[in-house]
Amino acid sequence: MEAKKKILVVDDERGLAKIIRLNLEQDGFEVVEANNGTQAMEKLRTTLPDLILLDVMMPDIDGFTVLKMIREIGNIPVIMLTAKGQEEDKVKGLELGADDYVTKPFSPRELTSRIRAVLRRGSFSKDEESGQIVVDDRLTIDFGKHEVWVEGELVQLRPTEYRLLYHLVQNAGWVLTHDQILNKVWGYEYEDEPHYVRLYINYLRKKIEVDPSDPQYILTERGIGYRFVDYKRKNS
Image (cartoon, rainbow, N blue to C red; front, side, top):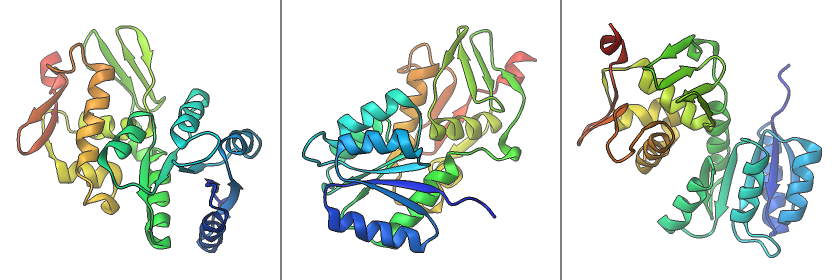
């Protein structure tokens, strides 16, 4: 039997944290609670969760600061819980390394769906692994080892960035529409979140392009989607 996925719920609203725990346990997850940022970091080290639900507004250390601390440790998936629907708060969380956000109030079904989607994105299946790909003298990718080398240096990508890069590279030379990218990388749960594609394309460009404002690898097909440069034809 597959081990239960462990979720760390970090929220200073104890009543809400309890409701989340009960619903997630009913859906087959193991749940650990923390009621502030300090507890969250302690539980992270002692329980080793598979995913963290992290509230933004907390009394001792705010969620954004906790997220920075988490990212100094590793790439464990993080979903931000926010009472604000403002675009800048959502973008800030994603910029700092969050994998997703859910705006309060949310339904148990929505939350479970988002958790499963993020966990699904966090792992490559055997079908998604491949050997080393030499794009050019500057960029080398090995999806099997989860390694991207730019000018001889290893570049750290988050799980979602790997999946996005994988699908772009596997379809090199072909245009992927915004909807196709959303479905392949994030899943059907994100059909109403088109801004994710734009944000993560920008993240990738900052990490692999010489000049992100004049990309040579990830090309924009205006009004349609994105295309990875046809490196096979280029290298033939």
